[in-house]
Each structure stands twice: as structure tokens, then as C-alpha cells.
Length: 470
Image 1: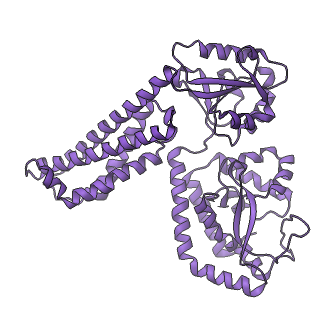
Image 2: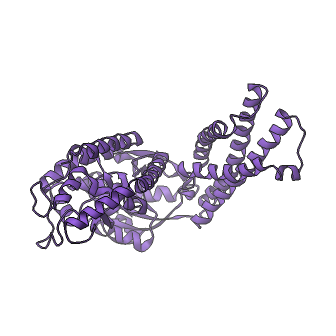
Image 3: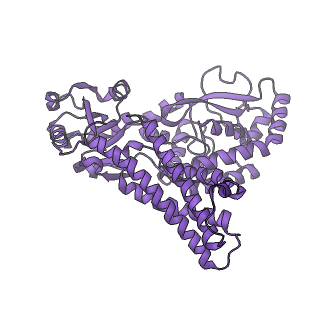
């Protein structure tokens, strides 16, 4: 079971579908619109416009499918999903191709134009769906017959877990779960041990998942264990495993969940993705595009700031500091240096308005947020996004977590150069203010969208231009 080979199969199938549909459109237009007869192979290969389209169009379709998430989780795809995604991507892609490339063609009537539009739509939709159906059907069959399966961990060992295990194992077709063992929750319930091995406790979940390469986690806790659910979900944060839960505790879940009956398993899938795949793709594309343009356009500003920093205080122009990013992963954040060298010899400290450690130029840079500009490099490296909760240091995160355990929700997404909390509240001078700012970042995460990101970027630009940052 090789996910990369399966993904490659989808890519190749989609590429061939795009090539064939583009060729069919070319022949259709030659025969129906230009009425020049069916072209032979040499004539087709000699047409520069056809060859240019052959190089560009299939690549366009692959990018569109990738942004729609059609190459992610290749083992979890099913035919209804294929129909829905192929339909809407075909509709969007055909409109882009016609309005972007073919609208200025010489045509005798709009009937011919709509005929070409219909021909490309029908051909591309049929070929793409057929190719994907073949691959998806083969995958589903291998899972149903037990040839392919996912290493699965059960959390909970009570009678509820036993009933779930027996129900799944009793299905007529395999559900795709290869049970590796279970995690004990309350130290008492071990009824599942007659079927599976006890692999540890809740505090050891991450190690168990890593050691056993777990791909699926099924939470099977009882009503008396509901207070443990948050601790379990926190422990699972940052792991690559899919999380499912028994339906009758649906009412205790908060956030986005959706029913999932793929492969016949009667479980609820917890969707940990805050934004749909297409919005995540657009957000990342926006991050890259804006960062590249910003680094190019602002390069003269970078030079001026660098000279000012260097001329007004001894030390390096840039300052690197370890921050905690998505899923608790540390990274080095890049900023223009705004403080004197060795400003934290007494240990980590938050800055304040009258902080003597801040240089005169640094005070201006912080007020205007210009010190954050080098973080466009962090965005390109994938450590940060344009918009997201501001990353903090581990020293202060531990203090925040003691008073606001829900801080871990901020680590579900990439930290940002700017954030709703940064726009509304500004720099925090102590842990109390960091907790106050946390409210705005939590609101952002609960309402993440491309439109909200653009709004935050707009207000950030106003802050920079007005120099009103806190």
C-alpha cells in the first residue's frame, strides 16, 4: 500500500484526461467551426496553438485539482466524493479556459461558441471521472477485502470499546481498520484487553502513535469518562492520525464534526481542518504571492532600515529568535533588531513602551511594525503565514497555558506576520495582556476565511502607514 504511487496514479490519469479532452476540442473546432475536415496527426502536431495548449492546459488542471484536495488522502477517497469534486472543478476550469484563452476566437455565432464549451465540458468531465472511478474502485475493493488496511489505535478499554470492536470486526466487508492496540483511559476499564494489547496511558498517546505508525484513532470512552475527552483531543493535537469517535457522544463535541460511513464503519470523523481544502490552498498561494512581491518591492526599504539599524547601534541588522509554530514545532523567527545586543541577559522578558532596551530606531520600527517585514522569509519557508496568531516563545507559552489552557487551539494553524489580536490589541507587555490578546486570536480561528484574512491585511497596512501600532 503505497500512498505516493496511488497519488501518482491520480495525477497521471488526470493528465491524460486533460490531454485527450484538449485534443478532442481541437478536432471538434476544426471540423464543426472551421469546417476544414478532420486533421491528420502531422497537422495537429504542427499547430503551435495546439502544442502551447497541450503544455499549459493539463498543468492548469493538475493545479486546480491539487488546490481542490483531489490528490490528498488517496486511500480515503470514494466515488461520491469523486463525482462532486470532478463536477465543480470541471465547471470552474472550463470557464477559466474559455474566458481566459478562447473568448477572442473567430466564430460565426454564439451557438458554435457554446457548442465548443459543451464539448470540452462533457469530454473532460467524462474522462476525468472515468479514470478516477477506476482507481478509486480498485482502492475500495482492496480495503473491503482486507488487502489494504490502516493501523488503528483504540482509546478506551471499557465495554463500549468492546462492542465497537466486535461490531466493526463483524462487518461483512472489511472496514479498513487494522487494530494495533488500545490506550487505557481511567486506569480501571481493560475489558478490551481480551482482544487487544494495552499500549499505555493517555499521557503516552503521541509516543504510541509514532512507534506504531498509527493512521486511525478511535475514541471509545463512556459517559463517565467525558471529562477526559479534552485531554485526549489535546494529546492528539499535532499527530497525523485521523480521529473518529462513537456517535452517541456526539453532543459533547465542540467544533466541526461530520458523519463518516466510508467502508461501512459506524463512526463520526472529527474534522480538525478549520478551512476547506480549496480555501487553504488559496490562503497558501496568497501567502507566497504577497511575500514574493513584498520582498521585491520593499527591497529598497530593507536596505534603508538595515543601514539605520547598523548605524545607530552596534550589532547585527537581523535578530533571530526561537518561537513555537504550528503543532508546537519550534522555528527561528526573523526580525529587524530593535533592541540593544544582549538585551535579555537576565532571561526572557516582554518589552514595554518605556523599555530602555529598545533603540530609538527600534522604537519607530516597532511602532510602524516595520520590524516584522523580514518575516516574509518565514512565510516562504512555510513556518508562518501572512495572517495567523502571533507566535510566542516557549517560556511565555508555559505561563499562558497555566491560566488559559485553551491557548493550544492557536497552534492548530500557522502563526502569522499579523493577526486579528495584533491589529486590535497590539504588542503585549505582560502575560495578562497576552491572555487578553488571545481572545481575538481565538475569534479569528473560529471564523477563518480568505475574506477575513484580506480584511486583517488591510487594517495592518493602515497601521503601518499611520504608525499607530502599540
